[in-house]
Image 1 (cartoon, rainbow, N blue to C red):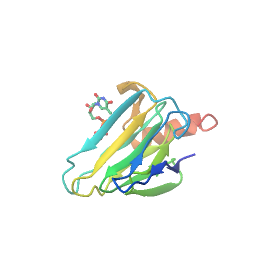
Image 2 (image 1 turned 90 degrees about the vertical axis):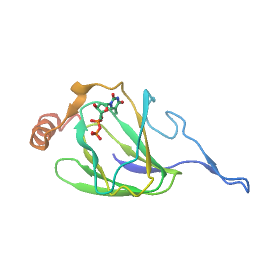
Image 3 (image 1 turned 135 degrees about the horizontal axis):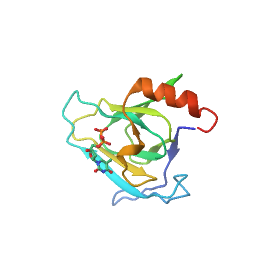
Length: 136
Ligand code: TYD
């Protein structure tokens, strides 16, 4: 289930430090890391679903919203702390929006990049969910 996961925060007068360990703070092995930055005001990213890929999203800087939709229910997560992350299971329609100026979105992914893993059409996603409901 999608959820916010609190990360360790080592506070220090010299500046704070947080970290992420695979299979401890994220429930999958990290295969790939990418980040989204320099998003112009008013633009969205990542409006699609993955069939297999799981992700963990952290707002390293600034803030943005992640809108998740399982085909029935929609949940909006506001990310604005670098010591919290959002776990996104496979099979969710997702959209990243409301990026603040200078925001930096770090994304940890469980699979290699694979264009074939993407569902780009919402109706197709609904259909896919209906067919895979018992497995998601
Ligand atoms: P995409 O996931 O489609 O981002 P968005 O949904 O926000 O548009 O990725 C955009 C482009 O970047 C696409 O051409 C594929 C490429 N890309 C990679 O080559 N490797 C990656 O790991 C990712 C996430 C994207």
